[in-house]
Length: 301
Image 1 (tube, rainbow, N blue to C red):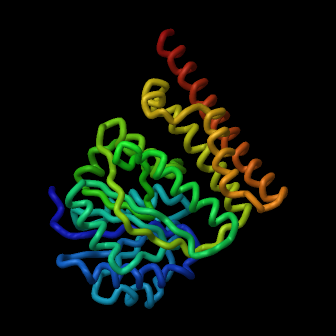
Image 2: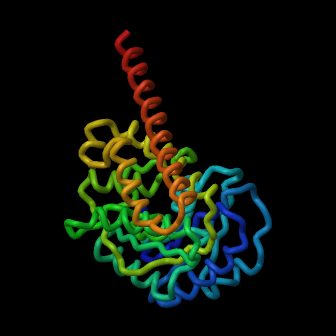
Image 3: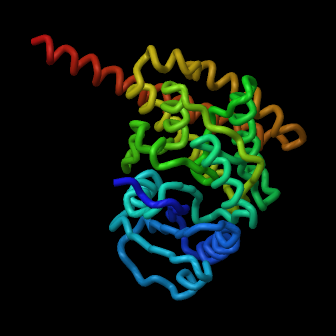
């Protein structure tokens, strides 16, 4: 069954709910610029609870549907649940710690109509050191893949896609996927469908600490190792993502742009996070490879 024309905004909500009202309010203002029907699907990654009245009224005339995952399963699972409950054919994704600009929905929807899939940039509202690290890394990943005029990096906090394109990609939106946006970018590239960049940036609200920064790097390392195992060597080489040594050299080179004047401690912290990323990648990729070898051996018996 083909869904009706309209825009469904899927919001993965995995953090404390303090920022959710601001996020929904900004989405309501942005959706008011659309000519057609629109909705917000907020998926809370937690056991069922009470829905605050301000969440339901923050978007003004646009309906807000709140869904609960039942227990902690991660943002990837939350997005899958949101897509399954979305009513319309255009899907826009963002997170609960993001405030979108007023023209976000209109520009993203227009981009989706023209290209099938679009992504935008992410900016931090904080001037903290690790927020700047994250922001520069996101910009770097986008710019590094745009030399041929297309953008091959996507970001779920700022993503628009038609349901047709989304359903055509074999994306693993399960509780174990820690890099669903990177996997989506990889699978789109392998299929020849490249996302276009929309010049609109969303603002991230939450402050980043070193603990959250290194935790994010470790999760991404685990996710990339898992993805390496799932895609196989041929597809990985085709994507030109590189092995762990290449990744470490690239992150260290990028860190030099971030850390000038930051002091020895900051440089050591970023270097430690880069090494943790690569170690996580190597260990998980090796485990997947061992599992594949054992699986092949069993089938030959």
